[in-house]
Image 1 (cartoon, rainbow, N blue to C red):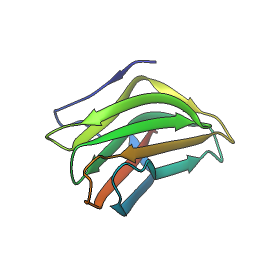
Image 2 (image 1 turned 90 degrees about the vertical axis):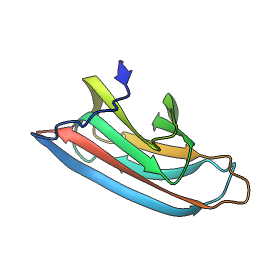
Image 3 (image 1 turned 90 degrees about the horizontal axis):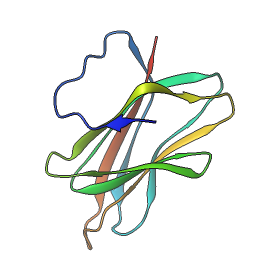
Length: 117
């Protein structure tokens, strides 16, 4: 599986949003789920966008297995882009979890999962 982080705009033509979520007041040093998708049908995932109030580590899990870890820096937004689609089959569970280390801060985070039509 090949992932890349994009800094330029990405065309969303032909792509559907299949799930979006946000969480607020996430405490420091606590891995917290931003978004969960339980596949009721097969999905070909092409992009997952994540963003938040500050620097953070994002982890992509499928069926509780860690697949990829990414870190958001000064731009505070990043995309998981799959050159070949990530196939999520019926019954599988995809989670994006976030971890930040700003002690004393409770931050907000968002995520969107996209599938190609």
